[in-house]
Structures are given as C-alpha cells and as structure tokens.
Amino acid sequence: MIKKFFFFFKSLKVTTFLTDVFCFTLACVVLLPTTVSINRNNLIESKKKEVIKCCEEIARKIYLNAYLANKGENTGITRDMRTTADIYGGRIIIIDSNLRCITDTYDLETDKTLISTYVINALNNQTAEYHDEDNKRMEIYYPISEYTSSKEEGLNGVIVFSFSIAKEYDETDKLGKSLILIIIPVAVLVVVYAIWHSRRVSNSIKKVTNSIEHIREGYIDDRIVMNSFVELEEMTEAYNNLISRLQSVEDSRQEFVSNVSHELKTPLTSIKILADSLVMQPDAPPEVYREFLGDINAEIDRENRIITDLLELVKLDRKNGELHIATVAVNEMLEILMKRLKPIAQAQNVDLIYESYRKVEAEVDEVKMMLAISNLIENAVKYNKEGGWVKVTLDSDHKYFTVNVSDNGIGIPEESQKFIFDRFYRVDKMRARKTGGTGLGLSITKSVILMHNGQLKVDSKEGEGTTFTVKVPLSFVDNRSN
Image (cartoon, rainbow, N blue to C red; front, side, top):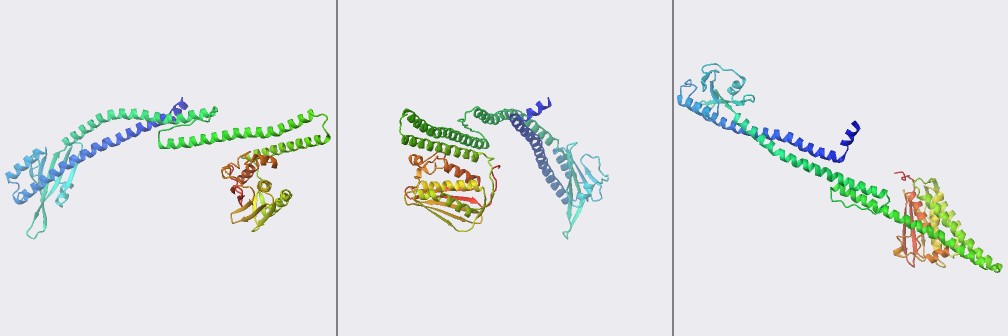
C-alpha cells in the first residue's frame, strides 16, 4: 500500500498537476492577506493624515487664542473640537505642560492628571501614535508649540486625538471576501489548466516511450514530431538524430553483410567454375591442370585474405579489443616496414623513399600500428604507375607524431574520397581484383588510428597522386571506456 502511494507521486503527470495547484494555492495564501493588509494600511494611513491635519488646525487655534493659558474657557474652540471629534467618531483631549487635562470632548477626564509615555514624548515635540487593533481605534499624540519673542521653541501641551478605524477594517474585510469570490472561479480554471498541462507533459514523454518500444520491436524508421516545450523539442531532436544514426548503422550493417556475402561468394564461384571445367575435361593435358589448379589456389588465397581481414576488423570493432601499448621507437618500426615492402615495390618498379626528421618514441600497439601504416604503403605501391615513387616521412612535435605516405600514382577521384574508408569500397574494382585487394585495408587502418586517439586524412588529385597523413599522440590515453 505504501509503495503504491509513493509510486503514485512518482508519476510525472501527478507531480506536474500538484505543482501547478500548489503554486496557485501558495500564491493565494501569500497574496490575499498581503493585499488586504496593504489596502487596510493605506486606508488607515490616509485617515491618520487627515486627523493630523485637524490636529495642526486645532493646535494653531489653541496657540492664537491662548487657550491653554485661559484654561480652556474659549467655548468656540471647544465646540469646534467636539464637532471634529464627532466627524471622525472619536475623542479629543487637551493636556497642558503640567499633564493636567484642560478639555475632554467626552467630559470624563477634565481637570485630571494624565501621565503616559506617549504624552511625555509629545511634550518633547515628538508626534506619537497608538494603534489598538482589538478595539479598532487609533490615538494621535500631537504637540502644541508656542514661539516666544526670541524665536526659541517651547511646548505648551498635547492634543490627544482618539478616533475609530472600524470603517477601514470593514472595507478591507469586504475586499477580502470579494477577492475570495474572484479566486474561486480562477481556482477552477487553474485546476483545468493543471490537468491539461500535466497531460501535455506526460503525453510528450509517452510519445517518446512508445517510439522507443517501437524501435525495440525492430522498427528503426520511426520519427517524432514534437510541438511542445523547448526542452522536450530539443530532446526530440536529439532522439531523432539518434534514430537517424541507428538507421545509418543498420543500413551499413546490411550493406556490410551483403558485401561480405558477395566477396566470400566470388572466389568460391570462381573455384566452382574452375573445378567444373576440370571435371568436364578428363583428358586435359597436365599444363591445363596446372594452370587451373594455380587459379584455384589463387582464389583460395584471396578467400583466406578476406577472412583474415574480416577477423581483424571484428577484433578492432570490439570496444574491449585489447591494445598492447608499449613505448616504441617509431623510426625503427618504419625502417622494418620499408625493408619488408621493398620487394613488392621493386616488383612494381616503384621507388620507396623514407625520411625521418627526428628520433620519435611513442606509446602505441606496435603490431597494429605496423599493420595500419603497412596498408597505406602497400596501397601507394599497388595503385601507382610504372617508374613511380612512394615517399614515407616521419616528424613529431611535443604532443603528436606524424607519418605522411605520399605517392605520384593514379590518385583518387574527388567524389570517391569520402567513401574510401568504407568496408569493401574500391575506386577501381577491376584494378583491385588484379592487385588482390579486399577493400578492407583502409577500414582496418582507420580503426587502428582511431583506437590510438589519432587522425587519418587524405589529400588526393586524380592522375597526380595521393597523400595520407597519420597523426597519433605520443602518449596513449585510453578513452574507449568513456
């Protein structure tokens, strides 16, 4: 039961709905009392300013008519004070500097001595006020000042003006009730919006989830069109890019399987044809047998090379494929390669040139790196012309070493350069078949260079030659698990 309860609140739809409702409720709880309080304070402040103006006018009359000196005998001023007090539903008391009550519009405190902190502060020329929230009343303690002939300030007494603020409280209470009546339909609209908002968010996520389920069933051509929140649209765009990548990988896989089937089948077909030809010629001379068996042997060798390269690619494609990293003298490694490939170059009447600008040591898998660079040099020799040259140069800086393999051979057409690292891709299929190529060499080379966190670039012009540039870090850092 408890798990179901928590699972319910883990729902994005429920959480979004509750969040919207909570935010509205919180806003109402905070804003409603605040609005009422600010309005009430404004009304009370306005009335207080009016009362202070009245106190100023009364103080002026008291000073001009020497009301305090005459002990409040001026009935006209007293009558005006009673009228003013009635207007504000209040009471006015005049106190002299001896704290004796001169006048009380309620006639309750006349001739009595009144002592309070507020009165003392007012006698010190400080206007004071007292707010009685329980009885909804307010008192203003206003000083009465007189000025002597020497302009020195003196205090004669205090005006205590007590007035009702019940009307202000009633008006703000009515405002609060009106706001509540307004909030009720707004709350209904907020609930409706919260339901719509929560469904919109959850449906967008559900749309992605359904698409993922669709892909899990084997359909990778699904795309999502999302007109929703910016973040969801960005997530959808990233998702669609992922689907496009998966589609590309699937297409590449299907093409690879098709190419492998074709490449493996071709030598077998040739062997079958040659064998059938021998069977159909039981009286063929030994020379014919030797020729046919030689062709069969060549096709078997070709099949073996394809399988070997395929196995090598499988090893390189595995993310956990092992690299036996060690510090290698790259100069010596390239010298060994050049000696090994020199007979092939001589057979093609191609000059091999090697240049090294400095001694280079790097952390690499020597076997795999030799395989990668060997493929580049062999291709440069095979796809060259009579009397051509292949130049291998080695250089380095503080971070990378660079191997350039250049030739003045037949070159690569510009439109084919972006495909040359694809498996089984061959620019000239007829020439590749004559040279015994499998179409996997450059794919293997690129995989090896990438495993070493390096770069492989090609620059070629048809009929002029090709340059492959290998750039590999001197220090190896294994990023394959990241």
